[in-house]
Length: 376
Ligand code: ADP
Image 1 (cartoon, rainbow, N blue to C red):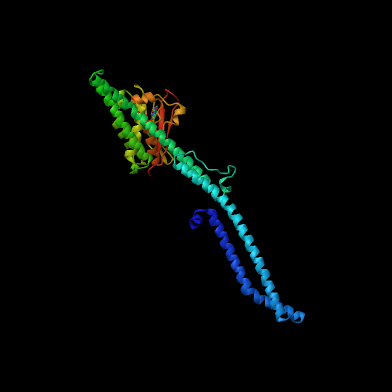
Image 2: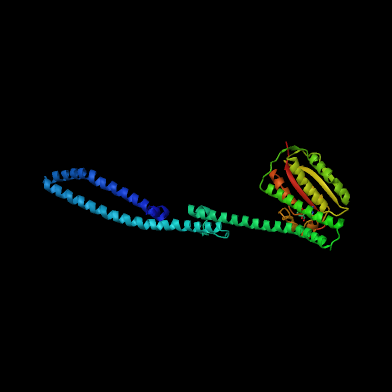
């Protein structure tokens, strides 16, 4: 019985009402026992004096009848209160218990992996109009939506990573089989192809590690005032030769009022390398890439513009999404995994800056700009 009470809200409610009723009865009964006799005697004595006196026997008789009437009334009201407690506790526990039970079932279903599970919330009521239970149900549904989204992202991520890994692995396996069967010549070009695919795999794994690190925020920023020119010069020093090799001109244009920026030199150097590296990759020979910087209020805007293949408007908003590549086949041969800009975005935002891309259209080049706070 005790267990039953412990496990059921309706029983607990009923018992709490019963306790209140019992306290009421005890108070009333004590009042009848201790206060009423003296009060009754006082009033009766006053009445008897007015009427010219009453016998003691009559007084006792009157009092006994009065007490009987009070006790009868008390017993009747106790019964009525008991019945009301029964009805009210059943009603209230239904009102509270039903949505709580519904949420319990839904949370169990979610725990089993059914992330599309939702509970009923009166749709015509706003947050302010809902009671605590309604708000709990609404928060529950919001949590379920979030979980469903996380689960979808997780599935998509696993699918994409598996797909990205499968391509170079299939190629390496195919080349090795060709070599074993003697179908492919064991010459430099075959080994180079295998090497390229292994290299691609290695870069992909590195990118994935980097992505998970920045997405989890698991990196420390060593922020200090850094001259923009230093950032630009170290990028030019690292990529200059590749530009020369490809026949793309690399220019810099840092305006005079550019103050140092608050930045982690290594991390922002990584962003610069990614943007300038992309500009080189997507600009054909004979084109130009320009790194410029200017001051806009309390921010420094650093831009990398190229005269390359450009990006259409529909792709502009998406290229910062992980694994997003405009031209999948081109990126594959070029080795891009579509992670670089996602990492760059996280790194810039962790400095309190923004990053965006602009392009007049395909074949008309593009400009990638990011902002950093001025170090004053
Ligand atoms: P990837 O490693 O594929 O270059 P990114 O995240 O750096 O990955 O870039 C995502 C996509 O954005 C690229 O696949 C490419 O389609 C597009 N993109 C990036 N930079 C440029 C650019 N300078 N010009 C044209 N397209 C670009």
